[in-house]
Image (cartoon, rainbow, N blue to C red; front, side):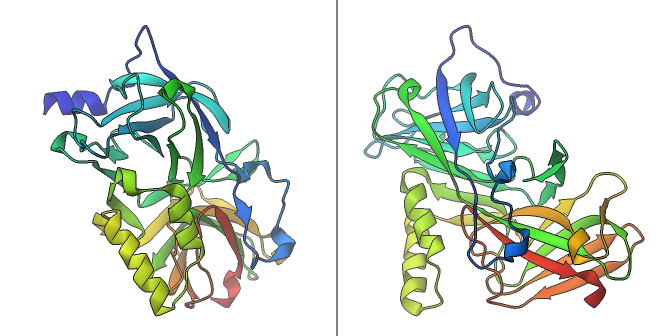
Amino acid sequence: MIALVALVFTSCKKKEEQSTIHVITEALVEADDVDRAYIDMNDPFRHITFEAGDMCMIYNISLEEPGPEYSHSATYEAVTTGDNVRFVNCGWGSVGHRMDDAFYAYYPAGPSYIRDRLDEGNNVNEFYVKPTQTYRTIDGEVAIPDKAMCMAARVDNVDKVGDADFYFRNICGVLGIKLYDGNGVANVTQIQVYDLNMNLSGWVEMIIPEVDPDEMISLFNNYSADPTYLAQLNEYLVRVGYHATETSNHITLNMPDGGVQIGNTKATATQFYMVLRPLAMSQGAHIIVCYATGEVKDVYIPAGTINIAPNAIKRVSINLKNW
């Protein structure tokens, strides 16, 4: 127990000789069905950006011999800031000198985000999707909440981890909400999304080598209510060993002290970003907006209105006067 507590509250332990990896993120795309009046394709914050100190987990996985003897993991820490950065092994584990079957990478990582279970004799790990996110701005512009976007990469064409370029794919999508209140300017302290059909947060268990980011993203992007597709989706979830615990059906976006001011017209509406899992809201949802005054607005989103897709920004404009 003492060792576990020390791990959680200790920052990365740097080694004299550190292995380094190169990590790149992809830019979020605008969905085809958005309100075009609110798209800024020059928005620099459509990229997920790392900050120095951010962590990712790297795996060197053996398919034939799963478990700690042949499959290995290590935590790496960003030493630069941006969407094209270097990560350095920070002393928690090692992936070895040679690739086995493939290298895998996941973000975010660290004790609060990943439960490493390779020592149980399989290639299973758990990843945490937090139920809370925090509103933030960068250089005065609204940005994606920090450490909220789940990303994954797979590399199988190099011998050593130091030679790998990990191109992170965005597993989740982004809900962009434009809020205004025709009754007058107001301050918003919290926004919650409640899904009517599925869990949005919790610990998610998966078999690492079965999680191919390209396959996963393609499957979710082609979502359909057709029984054939639903059977294919269920087959996939079984194959990757999907299992979730400590779940909830809502995500909360918290504002800084005093809240964030929203305008009273569509032209003065305020942008908010929330990261959500694929297929979220597709079967209906509620967007709950809390005012600094204590007033609460419940905005109902019918099924088929919004379907969160990987690496896509889905936008909605809401006049809270109507609710």
